[in-house]
Image (cartoon, rainbow, N blue to C red; front, side, top):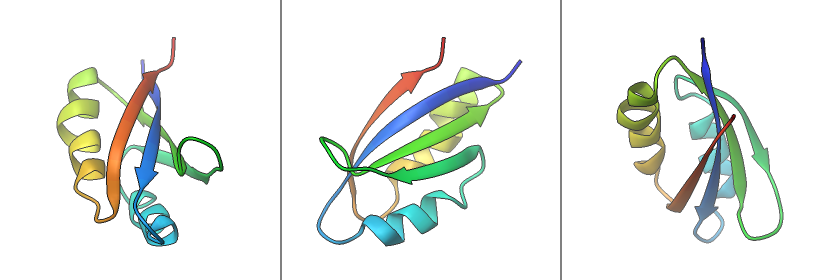
Length: 76
């Protein structure tokens, strides 16, 4: 059974478009939404395990240039 999550992403300056393009190529990322409000992007992720989410997907997301903060919300 797959594990779904939404990752709220804060981006510095005008990096939103480049971050969106980079994030969309990461394994496990299903969709990247540009939003207005407290966060700049919302990333929909689907992976097999919590360990995969933490060690692979989130690790890659946090290394993207321009991303300053992430908040992960697991689907119930």
